[in-house]
Length: 75
View 1 (tube, rainbow, N blue to C red):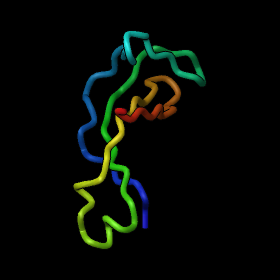
View 2: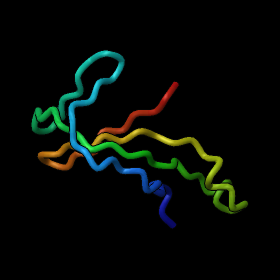
View 3: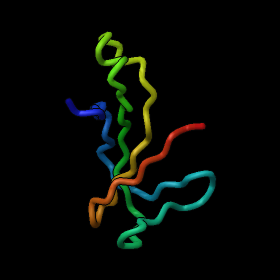
View 4: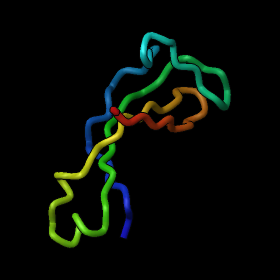
């Protein structure tokens, strides 16, 4: 069982992204252009009760150059 399920909400545009006012830069290749998507953070208990939709989600930014995925969760 895969603990993460990606919601099919990937943006069709790669562009600069900002986190709390700071421009995001890839930690691997220093690129500054990213695709965006949301990913559900599934837990075994919620999956058992078929309540995956109620899990928290994370914002992902995927580097357009090297493909590294940066994860962010709202606090």
